[in-house]
Length: 116
Length: 110
Figure 1 (cartoon, rainbow over the protein chains, first blue to last red):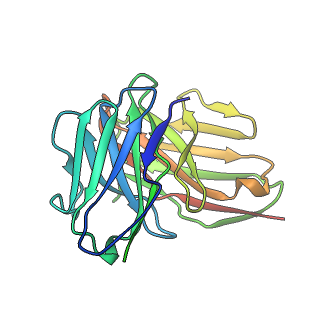
Figure 2: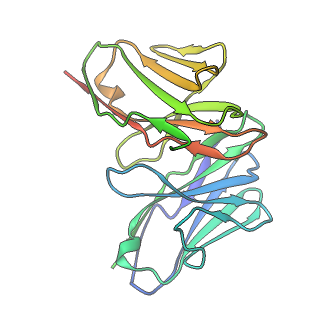
Figure 3: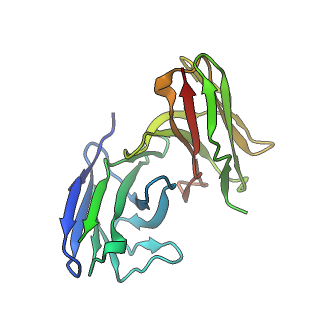
């Protein structure tokens, strides 16, 4: 079946640095990808919708200058957490929508970010 | 009111029980519907799509009621391994916005 690969799966970074997370659709083209964060025992929180070749649409309350999203190709979207702080530590998950299989959404494996 | 609403639970049921979850949506133009399963500290995984005619996959049955704008997931003969959070997803018209419910937590006990 369709696969979405997310990298890195775990990353530890120092406060004030930036970290980039990649999301790739491996066997389908994804015109739309989504980025979420999830805190322990809480539900997924949609951060932004990423459309290939255009600017991402951010959800209310999500700082677009802090969470930079780039969707430069039909198979790759990246999320860069800039000037990370400990409160940014979370589980970040991407998903990609496969328009050729009834708009089914497939998730990446997620990235655990720890800011120290 | 949220666009997609689920009863958060938790649902605590004994092994072998039948349990049902509902998910209501507000946009009548919504086109496609799915159920996902998320295990603790893992990403959600597609469980099944939901079709207008209803569909079944082993112990799992999904149904769509467009008139009342809800989808349901029925799990028969619950297993311990069914313990997870179940998320519904509603896709908007013409591949529009995809909206997730907050999830329903199921715990199956021996």
